[in-house]
Amino acid sequence: MKIRQTARHFASRKALETPVVRSVAKSGLVRLHTKIFLNKADPDRADEREAHLDALFDATVDTYLAALQEGYSEAEAREITHLQANFDFYNHGWTEMMEIPADELEAHYDRYEEFFTRWGITIADPLGEFEPAGGLAAAPSTPERLEDPEHPHAEGGFADDVYVEGPDGELVVGGRDEPDAEDVDVSRAVGVDDESDE
Image 1 (cartoon, rainbow, N blue to C red):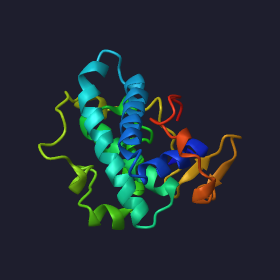
Image 2 (image 1 turned 45 degrees about the vertical axis):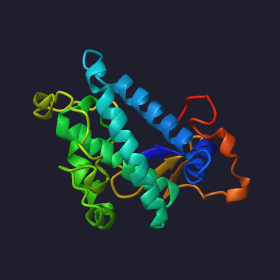
Image 3 (image 1 turned 120 degrees about the horizontal axis):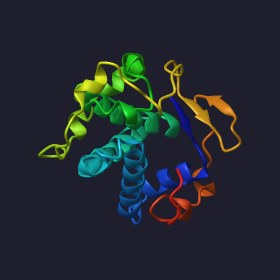
Image 4 (image 1 turned 180 degrees about the horizontal axis):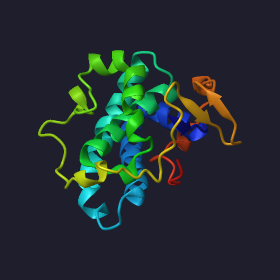
């Protein structure tokens, strides 16, 4: 998968790992991701998906932290969460929201199979053990879109590794070198800083 990685991503990671600002950062990240993906959704369907996406992204933040604790890089941990979201979108037939083509789901799953298996995550069960008690808010599916899926926001051809696009447009396989913790400004994190770019 191709993702972006900026100083703001590292600031958000540090904020999530810092007890004093963790809840603020988590709320900000959930709001940001819900907004981004609602903007990719069919406009006639966006409102009915909002509560589902809020709960989905709240759970994927927990996945992100677990992946970091297991030694995955920031880019890998974030890619894992984006894959979970894409599995969920696929299961609901929300193909217009997907970031990768449906025919690459298995290849992406296989790259993180060890992590996914440990936490009970499958394509059919995107959250596994991270699913909240009571599950996610229900939202209508559009299964007919799976018959001939359109992926206007998907970029194919990046299933063999995590590809990170930096602020300068340079593409780095595996992600950028992570800065030392003391060099990361937590005040720039999503939720802590009011800017809403990703």
